Length: 106
Image (cartoon, rainbow, N blue to C red; front, side, top):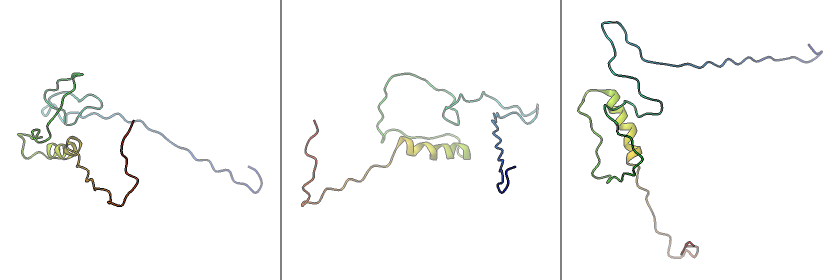
C-alpha cells in the first residue's frame, strides 16, 4: 500500500439466472409448454403469425376472457389494454393572436 493512501477494492459479482416453472410434484404436473422469449404472457392457446398488416377498429376490438376469477388474466388485460388502446391526445387550438402557426410542409 502507498503511504497516506488507501486502496479500495470493490468486487462486483454478476449472476445470470435462467428461470423455468417446474411442476411441484409428479402428481401435479404443469400442462403445456413454456412461452417463447418476447412472447405475450400468458401465452394464448393459439397464435397465428404473419407478415400481413392488419388494421383494427378500436371500437370493434375487445379483450376478454372466459376465465373470470384468474388474477393473471385480469392483470394481462390491464397490461395490454393501454397498448392496444392508447389514450387520445387532447389537441387545443392555438390562440387567435398566434403568428407562428405551421401552414405547410414540403
